[in-house]
Structures are given as structure tokens and as C-alpha cells.
Image (cartoon, rainbow, N blue to C red):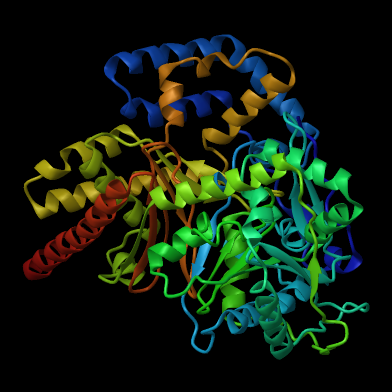
Length: 606
């Protein structure tokens, strides 16, 4: 559909500051068609039966001879007219999705913070730091992120604040709006009710100190405590459900009352959302992870999932749920980890009690259909959170220091362990999917590493039968090397998923038949993701999580610290999630023992 949202307004300060290197970034390349199809076959064939493999190879050859070259030329022509050939196609994966945001929005859980043991204190701490971060971003003073290979694209930064996804009619991508320069307030949710809290003054100054914020959050909790059956008319719950139902309800509410229309605008334009979860206290790591993903019974209607939500429990535990259309994990990790450490840009704070005043944001909900849609959304979220298998593995056996000391890539080491664990649990070769950062390119986001090959598959099948530690360590190193090869190609935009997305979208937009290669059992299997992993997080972030990728698939958000690792594992079956978590822990310890045994033998022989 390619309905591109208006970019945040260009300001001199941002153009001369945070965004000053945008035009010098390289354009994301498109791999030659033959290379893409060759990589596809290498990565999909090990997951197929012999009969399926032969059919898939024939389909790939036919595609190269028939519609493939013309689609490739059309994609190149499209690329010539854009900053990045993927940006519209990729964004519309999210804005064009008509199911629940539960399937799209990723999450973080923060380590508990000393001194932040109540919801008002925790929320005040995070919001005060966020406002410092906001001023830095708004004014273009946020530093450009650099790697050893060069600058990263900073295009997502202005989208961090004042952004909302707005539902559109069925068949149309949702709209995205941004008010970073105009917005002066945050929206606060408590027991499903919405409140407006001004935090920025007319001159752009911060008018809410940490102490004032804490007092205002206490007022909000007190006011919300007097509400009767707030979930019954909780408009925020609509943002968690079916998009078409939400669009219809929003239209009905907007037409019914100018106040409703103004209330939607108030939330859409808010810098961000704070969700105070009254009644949620003493949650385990797994419960807190479910709370930020789906919500729990009693909190799941307290979300506005078309924006990003700082979520705080009554005892101060905190997390984040964010709308994914313009904001990726790396961007949100860099934001959330920094505010967790009390980010301070040095922006002056001029507390103004007269201006920083809580105002309820009213929604008049009276029609039965909208009330039914709210109830359905809440029931659906409750069913999801009750049934979800969620495991949190805080592995203390070793971390990046040991892995690097063994001359291995931490990312590849952990991915190899997850692949072995999957094979031991399921006794089949997985279809993997690992997100890879592509912000080295202009408007780059993420590509995909499908970490599978004949070598990897053979090592998975042979692992348990290998007789010696030396044989296993050699195979493990070979697996890591092949994983690293595939990831490196993806980082250079030489992956399979992104150009194939381009071919399919070009065909769809021009009214052509689907690319012939997708009418095949191999392509179907390629889309049945068994193991969806993403390396994202750093302290004080505790967990990074997201919904399972398929009916029988595992999602694993993880990161490697110096001497530990954090894993958030989900599966729609609780027993399967537990089995995978237990197996992964055993595998990591076993592999460490193998490496130590081989190293000890080597040292003894010297």
C-alpha cells in the first residue's frame, strides 16, 4: 500500500545535531537475485524431507528462469526512488497487521531498583529520566551512536516521543502520527482510566521534578481507587485487541462526542504513556514478563498499546511495552537502559505545581457494541496470559568473559546452545530466525539471519552420538563459525527475508501473481518459525521478551553479560517452555565443561 507517514518535523537543531550524518550513511544494498536464492536453498533445505527438498530446488530454478528476474528489476527500480527499498514494506508489516498488538509489541522488564519500592516512586524515577532524555532528543543534542565500523542511522530517535499508531479501515495500513515538538504532556493509565499530566512548559522547559511527579502519581492512584468497574468502559483495552474492532469503536466514540475525539487526541499526542498497575505486587520474574507482554487479570486493560508504555507495579517493579512500527529493539534498549540508570542530560527542571496538574481524560462509552469489544479484548488478553508458557532463565554459570576467553563469538556461542537445546527437545531441525541490526544503512532497521546450513544440521543430529569432548568442541566451533558467517551476511543486507519481502510486495502492489517460488512446501516451511531469537538488552534491563512466533515455536530474547546471561523464553505450551529452559541450562553447563576439558588436556600436553 506504501502509505508513508509524515516524518517528525525537521528542525535545525536536530539536522545539525543528532541527524547530521544521515545523508552520509550508505544505502542498503539489494543482493543479486541468484545470491538470495542460493542462500535460501542453503538455509531451507536442511529443514525439509528429501522429497520436499527436490521440489523446492525445482521451484527455485523455475523462479530464476521465469518471474524472478523481472521482479528483481522492478525492485531495483523501486529502490532507485527511495531512501531505503525496505522501509515502507517493513513498516507495513506492523501498520498493516489487523490482529492484536500482543503479537507485535516487544517488552522489557527492569531489574528492581533500590529506593523505588512503590509505584509513585518508581514511575517518578523513570519519567524524570525520560524527560531528560526527551529534551536531548527533541533539541538534537542526543549523540550519534558510533560503532567500530562507523555511524548508525539515528532516524528513529525523533519517533521516540509523541508518536502513536492510529487504526485505519480494514485493508488499509494504520496511520502514524508524531508530536515530538508540540507535545507537553504524558498520559497516565490507572485501573483503565486515563489521565493527562503536563510535564513540559510553554518554553520547552521541564516543569515536573521527581518529587512533584511522585506526588501526582499518588493523586492519580487515589482518584482511580474510587472508580467503580473501570474495566467495563476501559477504552485503552481496545488497543490490545483486534484492529478492525478498535477502528470501528474509535469511529463510533469519536462521532458520538467531541469530548471523546479530544480525549483520543490527548493520548495520541502524549509524549508517552505511564501505566500504573494497581494490585500487581510481588510478581515473580515470569509473572512480571507476562504482565508487560499481555497484562495479567486486573492489569491487561491498563495499556495503550498504540504507544510505548512505561509499566510500573504497585511495589515498584517496572517494565516497558512498545509499539513496534517505527521503533526497534536496539533503539528502545538504548533508551530504556539509560533511563534505568537515571539519564541526565543536564536540562534544567523548573517545578511548576500550578501547571503540572492531573486532569482526567474522559471517554463516554455507552453503546453496547463498544462495550462488547472492550469485554472481548479483556477476555482475550486474560486467556493469552493464563495459557502462555513463560520462563525466565537467569544463567549464572558463565558469560561473555568465558566465551571470549575460549575465542568464540558470544552471540554465536549462545545461538549454537539454543539450537542444540531445540533439537534435544523436539528431535527435529529447527527453522530459526535471528534479528540482526542494520542501522549502519540509511533508514536501516533489522535484517534476518536464518542460522541454518547443512553443516549446522549435521552437527545437531550427530551431537549426542559424538564420543569425545574434542569432537564435540570441534563441531561446536564449526557451528558457531557458520552461524557467524550467516549473521555477518545479514548485517551486510545479504539475507533472504528482506529481498523476498520486497519481491512479494512488488508483485502485490502491481497486481501480479505471487512470486512462483512461494507456491511450495519449502517456502511454507521457511515461514513456520520454530526458534525466533533476538540478542537485545543490557543492565539494568533484566529481560527482553516477545510473543512466540508460531503455534509450536519458541521465542527467546536474551543477552550476554560478562559473567551471566539473561533469557526470556516463551511458548504457547507451558510444559514446552519449561522443557526448553531446563534443557538450555543443562546444555550451557555441559558445553562449558567440554571446553574446559579440552583446554585442560591441551595445557597438560604443552
